[in-house]
Length: 320
Ligand SMILES: Nc1nc2c(c(=O)[nH]1)N[C@H]1C(S)=C(S)[C@@H](COP(=O)(O)O)O[C@H]1N2
Ligand SMILES: [Mo]
Image (cartoon, rainbow, N blue to C red):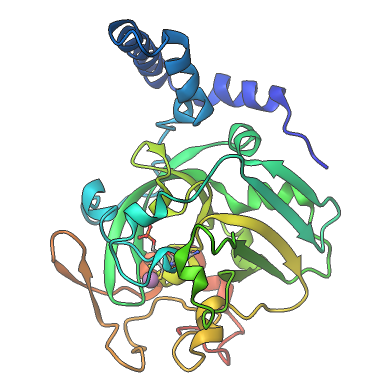
């Protein structure tokens, strides 16, 4: 069992928080105090404590300038009104239903073929990891796209703590399973819990990002709070939400969509304009909100980072 160390958190606070953000944060806290004084019902200290408990004091994190966009960021209101989160319904307006998810306490389990399996509370994890903001494109297999300021940390930083064994070939990730609160999980023909996976090499790529926030705030439930994946060179269904378990395995997992419809969805799911989905073209994509159409890019524009991962794998179905 690895316990998040305070010293790690203090170090991150000291070196990674730009002065301006820190000052802003103080202003926010004193704003909260003032608000507390005005509405007598809420004691000042509890308003500030609530912010800290929800992790709100960690945002916004410093933006990593390496991840620039070729398009405007998708409006936050548009983003939270158009989502895929089948646990809460197989339609796009699931934000209200997703509010039923209890995201505290939230325990993440890291196990399987690792030297050091551990369980960690999300609040300890998020304070132990080096948070940064990245602007990422996101391309759903349904041919819609968006651009999002995610906050999080590289997946490899977490795996490093578990120290994968030499025999581990895949990183398998799972979403919570609780049909009492997630009505979609009462639909027993779906292969719950939602499962996704990456090869070790993909998971170690710098682009593979574990997300804890969006738009400079803690992640909303509908986007997969408290912890989701973002692998922007792959179709959106690979970016699994509300993760409770990460297991290292020798065996390639059968993923949620693959189990449901293997002729249409595979393990790799790398974005490619030239390989159509069996039922529609992937040559272009529509930006949600603006309706603008853009040509699809190979690896969703991230080939420079990831194309090398697929050398020697040409026999695999890399693009479905
Ligand atoms: N657990 C879980 N993760 C999931 C999904 C889901 O239904 N359940 N949908 C996937 C799909 S198809 C997409 S496009 C993205 C959508 O993320 P967004 O709602 O933040 O846009 O989440 C992915 N992760
Ligand atoms: Mo998707």
